[in-house]
Image 1 (cartoon, one colour):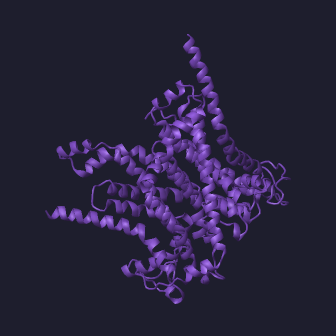
Image 2: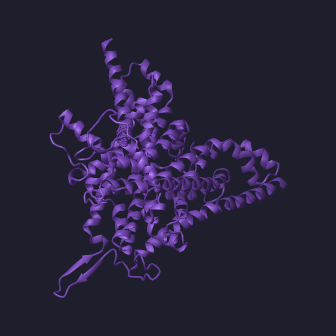
Image 3: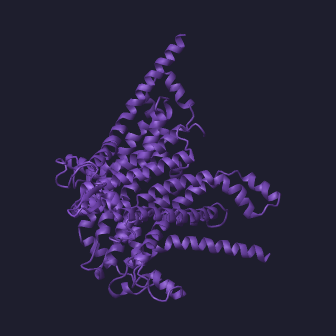
Length: 315
Length: 276
């Protein structure tokens, strides 16, 4: 009896200290994330401008949608939801994310399978693969901008030497190839991350599974499809979730590689140019808010779909 | 027999392609950074010149040194503050049972998934209100949004996997939680803290959006923004040699760090994600 009173007192004490330990971190997160998010949403319903933030007045959903009737009785919808440029940015972002992340998954899987083999020079390959990951995104974008240069770029030179193209391609300047250029940089830079996560999954597969299959004379392809793939699926899924959420907010590569290009403008780029370049602070806030909602929705679908283990109960 | 050889040949061909694609762009950046004038506009696959003029002009322009120091300062302070805040939080989240823990972890994880754009206008207001616009502290402050959730998350998974026994004795002896963290956990956590600290450092070093938005003068900019904003008088006068010299300068230490700590980094990255 005395003991249980004691433990419950101890539990209470420990619970109290838990919150005391969490408080500083939670306060910082609130000031840096929660509050600004709330303010962004509030600004999106006002007429705030960069210089007159404190005098922002509530204007309802005008930044999102507004029907303006002209004198002749005709009318037109204005606002973010009626802005073709915005929807194009949404489309660009999703197209970019789908293509880049699936390419990265396939390439990452190949690299991971190679790194999972025992061979001479494996350490060297792993070190080399990490290099793109270590290079700052801006630097990667600049390096590729130079390699993709229409006149002096080495990529055009290579492709022409091999005979794949007959005339230089203006990778970043031409609207048809601008998105491909952005995807190339992103895939190059983030495939290592994908490969490492998948490799971690591969290394958790017990070796005797493969031995048993070998003894039974199962073909390599079948082993991959029936043993490897199902077992690394959880690791691949988590990697895809992380990468997708990252890809959906892409900003820096586009900003540096293909500024002001309609075919590559993403949601982040659209929101920022309205916030700070066009002095449409409230309108930009509306774009930020909508982008947040879109990504939050995708995240919730992902988390429910992949049933992530948050409490650490299944270890 | 030939089949085995073919297989091996194919495998090594694949390995070569993987290495080449990973290393070549950086190699080419180094090559370009050593070229000047007309040499810049001839495509070379092998080193043709060893001209340090780009590096010299970069150093002669004093701002770049200041910008490197800015980056070092911001990244270091960010790592120290986020580790300090994260250790105690991770202890509470991993070793103490309390109601709402799962929800809290979910919230922290979702903050790390945040599109930074979503907080940009609100954060801009907060930073102006605090009088931190164009101050490096604005970056230290705003970078918490991604380093803090990440460090908390990784340290929590790490602490969760330590056996219960290690703190049981201390609890029985009536040691306070703070003492337990300091005396029992900290000595065990160094490897995990080095890894997460390193990853947070790289994150902060590479950040672009906030650094672009919250700094307004050249002397206050961090390296990525500085590189992004190098431009010529016209599109045809972009100083590619200078850009590459600056890029190589800020990337070499990073690449060295990553190669030295590669095992730790790999385990840190996977702890942050796979366990999720």
